[in-house]
Image (tube, rainbow, N blue to C red; front, side, top):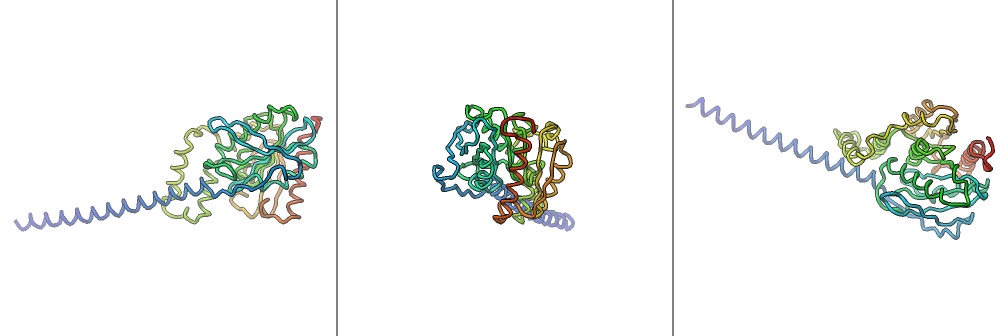
Amino acid sequence: MSASLNFKRSYAQLLRVGGSLFALALFIFLAVATISGYSLYQILDPPRSPANVDVTMLMGHPTKYKFQIPGEGEREGWFFPGLLRAPTVILCHGYGSQRADVLTLTTALQEHQYNVFLFDFAGHGSVPGRTLLGYSETQQLLAAIHGLSQRSDIDRTRFGVWGTDLGGYAAISAAAQDSRIEAVAVDSVYDEPSDFLQIQLGHTGLGNLPLVKTFCLFGFNFLTRQYRNVPPLLGALTRLQGVPKLFIESTDKQDLDRETQRLYEAAPAPKQLLTDSLTYAEMSDEGRRQYEGHIVDFFMQNLPLAGQAP
């Protein structure tokens, strides 16, 4: 009788301990899931600061130009005219940035008679929504090229693209799919959107918490499941044989510096590598002028205005 009673007491105590451990595990799971979900939301929906710019007051006589993005509707960009029927260079801003942040590079290219086009990616600048860290941005860039190709005042068959981090991924990914992109310059680029997600998660300081990175990657993969068959840029680069490529690495961003170096080494010729100590947005006026000079020289050599051989 005593042994049976002791057994029942031990069993009841074991159930209480097991229940407490289960409740603790459930609490930890819910806490990690909440932190991960919030972190992912913050990364995919960065703060927007729409440019309060009257396009008619900008230098270079730009005009608003609208194009259609399949499944999203109409998007507006700024078209800066250059030489009649010259090629067009599309400038793709970076993560957390917007089109107005690259206006000085626009001026440098337009002064050399290129047509230049700027637009905001979803979740940035004037456009609501969320970013998918390169997947949807590639489709937006391809839609912009398709829309611009309807114009009669540009060379509809020849485009150049410059982009930084988020815009750099979109630039290479789009160039691998559209042969009208004849020259690509990318700054601080990465191989896969999930790589950039982990870099941004590291900046929040939460990436080192147990399971947060795993949960964030799971959530991101679920949100981007329609792009699951998109190859990494390391695989797409093989399609850019013969397309001139300029890779720019900024040593102040070590994670992206390594990613850029890795992509440069894997890229087929022709290719160039340029190293800067600061990213474009953080350069001094003098440093920015030198940087813009490199970009202009690259396109002048590899995307001739009149269509003659480089």
